[in-house]
Length: 278
Length: 278
Image 1 (spheres, rainbow over the protein chains, first blue to last red):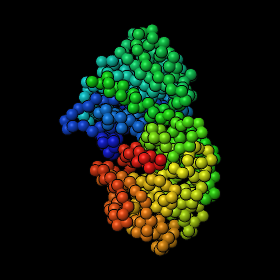
Image 2: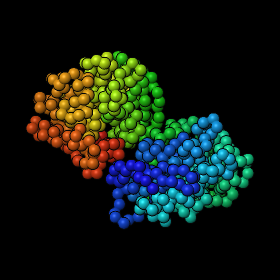
Image 3: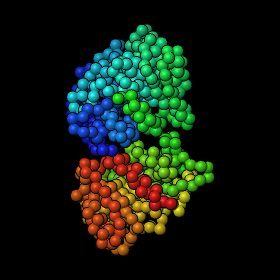
Image 4: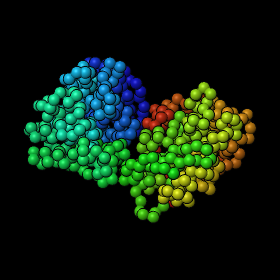
């Protein structure tokens, strides 16, 4: 693992790192903020999954998480959203919602994406070990959050590994990708025709199929242009209500889909995570 | 004036605006954050001048000022650092420290820069009226801050218009441009050979020549790679001590020159401004 940059901020250190990832067969870049801490101390870690078209850099630059993480003693890790590089295929039309920047946190099984698009394996199986080797994280205290497509990632991974993540939350998540254009396009390209593999990567379907979480927090902007067609928090509301999962769905009038929205509610989500991380 | 974008954040609204500027003879882009406020209320305004190579976007994305401005009730305006456009000459070698992104907050008098590089006139004489026409600022409560080259801008403009700015502060400012490579290169290109015009744009020289301020706040990173050769806070220390200007020079070990540093100390500078803005 190579440290690309390290910069002191809010009493901690913001690192950007690059490493050769075996899961994707590419170099991958991620950022990790380490708050001030005592030597030898290990800290709870929050995984942040970003949205369509993002790299690690968007939340790192615009997320406004460092002050809160420094105050709360949280390590904050932000991976990229897809494999990248000359060998990695993109959407044939170069669209932002498939291919580069649009890995959807699943392992593709369909050509030409199956070779490199293994973002589930990367985020769940590979990156934690890479981070733990060089940074002071406590593997028994992990939580996960994400934004938009990354909100989908946080919800589906959180539901799939409830023993690992003590808190799961999202900003404006794609709640039911199998029911909306972004998700259907991506799942068809990555996984093939609709079937059981789709439901394993859909938060609403996972809940319908019996997955459970002790609590869930979602912030959603009321002026989000993707609310009705792509995000559909009402489907998550219905699924959680039917399953008895306490969902705190916070609707914020006037807020849109970007980092003005995310940065405003970041400190609140981090405090909620901290209270569940022991 | 055209609103390029508006986004709700931290209870206020972050705007990006474009207008045809007569001082520079170009279109200019700036950002303005308006905190939550009562209808009809006018608010104190902080002008933030950015550093070499920046546009309005750097501090707007990475400055982490919105939460503090919302809490303190401050409008925050961030102009560009130079004129831009096909007709605007750049450094002949494309260097980052002259020409585009490097206006140094002065009015150039030397060809080829004299036609468009009128950043002093733009920031002091033109932009305030443009902002006041569309946003709720109180012209009797203004303050100014800046970073690096923009710290030079804030100090020199603050010293030149003490009746207008109730608070003046800087992050890692170029304190004495006539004595350092960045400043000497730019002043020679914009103003011609060294002479009285140079001293009018050098904070240390302005203080030596009799300009005064009631107080001055400077944050400076101790691991800033430009500290010794370009910034020289010790010259500002000496000039302020000799002139009896109370300078609060806060040295922060381990902090570098970028927005990790700026964002960490932004809320502190804004609170200091607010306490002086009535």
